[in-house]
Image 1: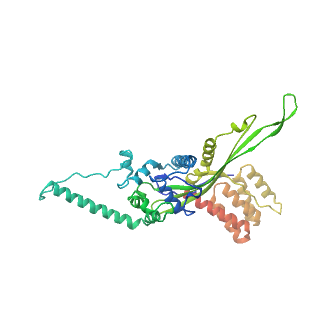
Image 2: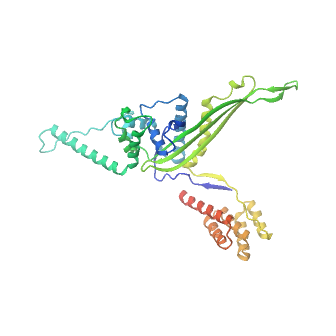
Image 3: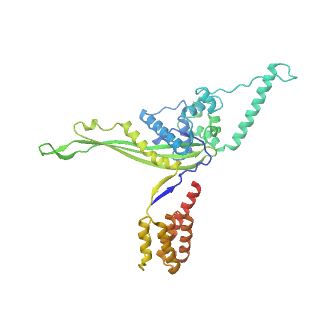
Amino acid sequence: MTVSRPPLVDLGEAKTATVLPFLYGAEGQGEDPLDALFEGYAKYHSTFAWRSSFRRSVSEKLGAAIGETIAQKAGLEIIEPAIIKAMISSSEPPSIQNAQQKNGKLKRPIAAAVVRPGTESAADAEAAADAAASEKSEAVDADADGDAGFFKKLAQKFGQSGTKAVKDDPDQNFEEVWLRGAEFADVAVLGKVRKTSFWIEDATREGRDDNAKAIIIPGTRKTFEFAYTLWVYRLADGAVLGSMDVVQTIVSEKEGSGSFLKVDSDEDMLNAAISASMVDVARLFAPYSVRERRVFAKDPTKNARIAEAVKHAKKGEYRAALKLCDAVYAETELYAAGYNAALFAELSGDLAGAIGRMERLDASAGSADTARELQRLKGRLAESARLK
């Protein structure tokens, strides 16, 4: 049967998202997602250097593909990496609007001087306006510091980095960027690339030439194994909304003379692996359908109406099957009739009815099967409620 599933991540009221550069192998601090988030932002910092062009290509292409998937499946606005980089590298308070309007160069807006009655000069009025603006800024910062402990932790982590010390960092505004991180995105997707392995092997086979003579046909098989883990963070409080381990294998096989020169390039295989993995990533952000198998209970009494109900179910006639099993269970309380009736109710789209039937059966003739199915049905009902 085909079952509709809700997205694996509940994004709530999120409207914007950013996809950070993925860590690569041992470059990250460790397995803690908080470390991964810190290192991901740090990779946009002006002092970061990639270890190889391929690693940079992996991170950039993977981030772009995930961002496109989120935009299409969840309808979120994707905050471009260039905007984040501008915020982190600027000495001014971060603002998406400023970064976009100034082509990546952030500028603090300057308020016009106002001369109020009783002031001695325009200069005095400007000084008073600056003082008021400064007090307001400090108040905002104090409020942000009070309810943004998560970003404070990230700022503190910067000083604990094993790859870069605070004294080596030319950007003195880095902490402020962390503290105001929630201003430019609701959620962040980040992760770690765990494996990018290529290997080539002979793939020769026996064949025959035009004269039917047995020959060995040369061939080459190139395999690419690609694996990564991603996390979805809510930036308001640092909650991990969900995570996923993705593994993808791509094979390129060619035959004939010089076949080793004909197999797909590393970049082509990387593109194919990333594209194929987006099917899994999409499940994090959008409803999806899966095929599931249902096993009906066997009837040791060989009741004719239960057998007929199973035949109806195999044809997709679930309501007819349900009517028969309900009637049999009401008359005989046969386990198979009650169990199958619950499954037929589910297949008919009545999850609440399926749960009610399975609960009654579990109370009177409970088994490991009824307990397992009851838990599964209740899980489906909760998912359906969230999906709506």
